[in-house]
Image 1 (spheres, one colour):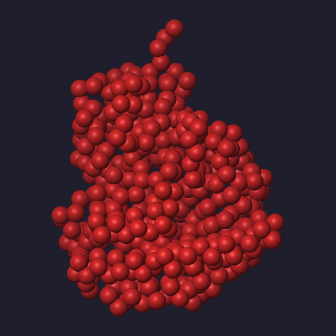
Image 2 (spheres, helix red, strand yellow):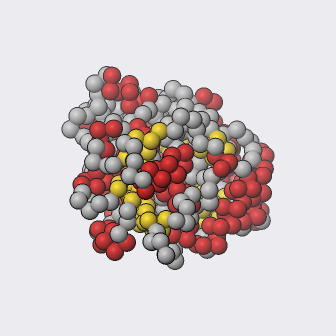
Image 3 (cartoon, one colour):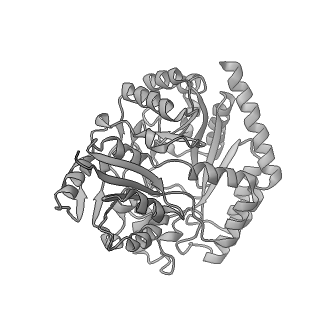
Length: 434
């Protein structure tokens, strides 16, 4: 019997924060702790998808980086390790791969960070996979076996999303997670200048609805999943998706997704959203000070956006309203005003991040040209919660302090309890609609 080659899929996941005061606030807030746990428990859909297209001639294992990772490697003895990492965890991945030198293990890295950061960042890896990983994976495996691995693999055209394999959910074992992920589309019709995801891996593509239905079935089969996150940038970018609603409703799964606030002005979407199992949708309100380029008809007056959000919540679906702080024109007063808007609103959930110029975005290129990127802040600061550039009307310290004060105010126990009650009321509406 021929011994199988072994591949370990290694994910560097979880939320990272460099600002110690903010990190401590996160520990103190029940709401922020719960959100961090939920995000950290999300499995790497990209790695599980590659595992799903790995032939049976390879033995596969999935693992999320932790203190016992070296022990897992010593026990499994992989021939190949496929790394996946976000920008903020790139340095952790690069530090770890150095520890593997001399162990005769081939190490490759892919994902958005590998596609957008300078190649020199990954000099200690044997190979870098840029763009859609599915396009290159089979060739990477073959070349690994034949000892002819290239330094860089880059697809020349976007991957055909309708050929997507079913992720290998069984690699997750029996551990229960707060949420699992399914992707129904890749990309977005918008090109917001700050977005570090929508167009960096190619144009907007949709997965066949029958493939989504099969994926949901397999997910429930192996994980008993009750809650799913649609790993889409903008699920209803082109309007109503009746076949998708049908598949989700038939799965009897509850789901979370991301969409534009304008779905609150679309009666067809609102009539099906809750009934199809949607319990929460993340909506980008973005900045209260500046309109980013590339947002298209996503731009709207705050009154109109809040009315649309109210419509979504009245349909039985909770909304996470997302705000970006620190754009050009931001002041201490404008951040305090944003706090007033949020605490006096009827929002059921809130996400507040600092403007972060992720590599590959127009925002990054513009700030780089202006010489405003902070040279003493490495990729580990690109967390969405740490300042990485010189603000236009404030000092770095002033922005950090104002952001901290805003987070402390919005995520106080009283505000968190208020939003919890609003969510309960919304989900009562949903139960009556079914």
